[in-house]
Amino acid sequence: MTYPVEHIADAHLLQADAEIHLFEITTLDGVKIYLKADAPVTWQGHTYEGIPLVFTPGRRSSTASSDRATLVAGDEGVSMLPVKPLVFDKALDGAEVKHSVVLRAHIESNQNIAFTERYRVKQVPSYGRTSVTLELAKWVDAMGLAFPVRQFLPPAFPTVQL
Figure 1 (cartoon, rainbow, N blue to C red):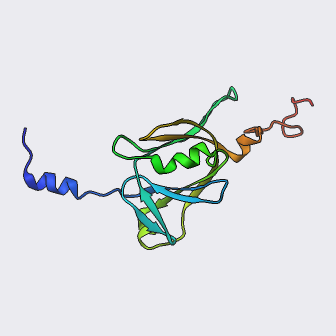
Figure 2 (cartoon, rainbow, N blue to C red):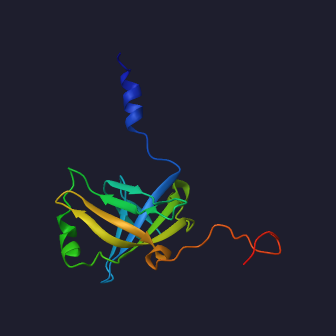
Figure 3 (cartoon, rainbow, N blue to C red):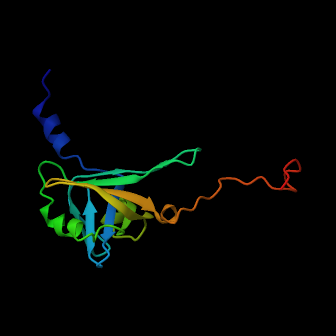
């Protein structure tokens, strides 16, 4: 099956819409790295470099086990050698990662409207010439705290005894 050349050209002009994920990594030395998947973008005076990124949010289960969030930067076409000193100097261990989800319209109009989550780097499980993987933990997880989802206390629940 062949497609008209105009359809293929139009498909190459498509750009991401709606939510754009931005990452600000602040190392223990105070160095700030601004990253975004795909093409670079400037928002709130910061230029977020466009490199291949895969962010996997963490999950919690009722058994108190949790999968940590991970951020993988790089692929076969990207050299991660500039990150090497940060990895080997342990500057990324304990670094803060600010993950902001911003609508494309707010980036284009430079409005400071975003949903932001903060993590800290728990460890760097893998580093190679073409990619680096960061295992992230929420600040509450880092302190070993767990909050109950719902409490059943008297007098609202008379059958509960303390």
